[in-house]
Length: 476
Image: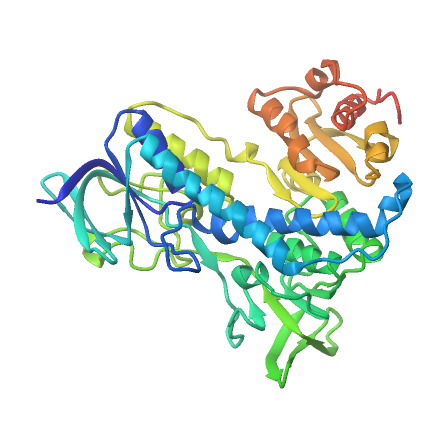
């Protein structure tokens, strides 16, 4: 007799495990199927985010930034340090300890909420007696029944034809997080979030880093003012070499050197030689073999599961969330979709506004934004006003020795409703939450301008930007 559940979730990443826990909180019997394994072959919950993505990358970013500050900024505070060295092995050990703590924590949360954890590959087989049969193939193969199925299988790295990733010399996000020594010369293909964050880590630790980006502009998804300043800070002040408008022609390994032949933005042929190469050109949905063809699950040409605005696939009681569906490939987006689907199964009517999902790049300075960019508003013909305020005029930023960047707020010219907020500067990933809350509650720039902000604090820069929308910033 097959095990039977109200809800079966396929995938235990930030979308899947959250969906499973929320469904269990709502009184459903829940199972979560996941096939991920750690390096030692043990089941590892948490998906890409916790195992080889968000969490370990932030651990390395913090470690490398601390090393950089000790080397280059301690003297500003009157602290003399000589002979600072980095122990990469210990740094990686710390990173893995954090990963293990959080992946193990999901297992504890499953037990607390009575979620059954099943290890193996989940595949929808067929619908029988108003229930779905889901195969769990692994060490102990079985078939379980489900009234509802939530597909949350995440994404995997996109690869470039002709470039073989071995995670020894040519690396994806997994290999980039586990380099045993600092390479002398590091190449990065792709100037997105992963490329910039990993490039920053190894640059701070001593590598010469060259980033090659196919797009003609840098950080095209960000506000133009943000991307222009970020490019200047990363290149002229931090020493990253970033080339845009690049077309890769050939990549090959000659002895211990990786050679990348490419044409630059002017059409000239170039050759880059590096010791290690990171390929970070985006991600693709992980929808291989999640349902037999007879089920009729609709998957588009790009590999995404087709869903409506409520994450429903069109098949009875089958849902999909996170990186396998439309929208930004962000862990927090996946989590909130997971919560929303669990609540919809329970008959509730949750709402998720894609325009209020924040984006963060954890470089130094950090980059964060929510809502529309200025170029988007111009293209859409929306009349707007803006306020911008620099961290250079903020006391807290100076005390942190991090007075670079600014906050820009965009508001509707007629209604004053906040349309977008863009930050490049210290703690941008934390500061953006105020803007997200404001936009979720349809706040106006005047609302933020009238709220008392603590002094001295970085949040005062958001306050001043809001004041600037009405041309009444005090300190600018």
